[in-house]
Picture 1: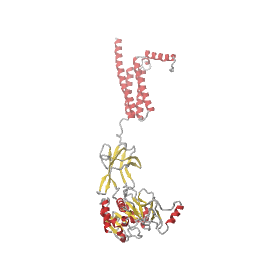
Picture 2: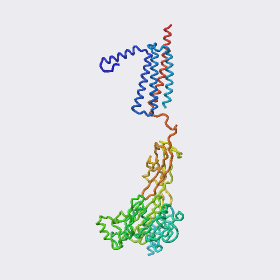
Picture 3: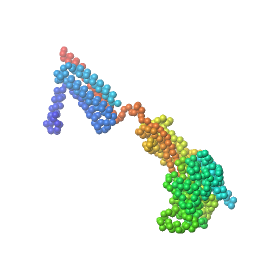
Picture 4: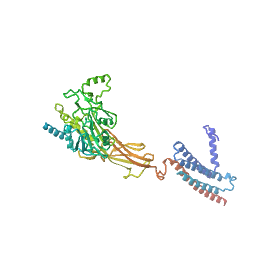
Length: 118
Length: 441
């Protein structure tokens, strides 16, 4: 990965990357990516609060953080299973089946999260 | 003479408010040599007028006993036989200490002769000079002998401020640093204790050569000293019995200025016999801030209110009157150490009530509310009330912690985002299927 810098050549790289991404990704995948970005920001925010302010109800931190991380993992695997370019990897798994796994796994995750949240 | 005496009596009784009563009883035993009893007739008449019942007893007489079967027979005892060396069997320093423990008040007169009462005075940290050395002062210039000394009275909590100088003859004593000692009358600065027969100038010279060492002199000596025991009984040691005598009461200090002996004696008797400066805690209550009844136990971090009701004895009316003027009362909430020490402030709307509000500390255990108010000359106020403090029950903790709100919002936002995502994904899925279906056709 090219590091960010202020030289026009490097900025060009980031722009090219972004253009390639937005041109070649379907809307459905972009929707999943937006959800992934939101989860990542939420996780970072909780982590920063824990480190900078207090980790006082540590169980609450763990469950809130695990909620975002677990949901991120679920959504990332949904993305890879639903991507048409990976059809050869997941021959037995239809997109509907992938979504069903995603939903079930997420609901079980949320059950555990609210139990541990206190 | 009789006319002068009755006139004096009239003046004394008019000058004072008659009939001030003690809070602990009126029976007084006076131990005095029978042949000297008439020397104190003014003093005794004054006591009788105030309402005390006097019983006279010679020092060697068998009865009436001061204490019988561990019960004191009298509320107060005055011992004016200051030169007697042999007393009856029940008048001993030990029995007097026992009397003080049973809340009997004493006035004890000392003299330059060594008596059993000198050793009693030593028990109270009062050190007497060697025997045969009364107080001597050559100032102010006067016709009386140097051992009859006019002493000016400094105002303190026991004697009022406008008493004329008092005639005194007797021994001084030096007081130790026991906080329960209340000095009432200090020796004048120019006085000193020395032998009576020709020894005085030599002892002064000797002491001056040694820099004042070994000389009993000055206002560090006390002539009349009170002591209040932890049971709140009071004992006053008087350095010379002549303070109470008729002769000194009637002798003039200077032309036209009568002596203050009668008024001084009355003030000393009033303090010692529990008429003045007598306080008590009527009751103490405690409860949670918005409740009225005390709970069986407190929980840590509760807010509670403690109230104490304090009253003062009014000897004129023989009643206990609420007293709101104590400014430095302290309350301690103690478990081995005071966890909370706060001021008990008077409540202006309810005179005599003192109140404090505070938070129970974060420790559980058995705590005590302790009031321990000791001031010189005033009754010691002590009170201790025990109360259990328990940690919160399992459902006594707050349900949601305010420090955890970021985590609550994180988890809830993830759930909501998941549901929204699923809904929109399925909606998009059905739209795509419809489009594909159309394309297939």
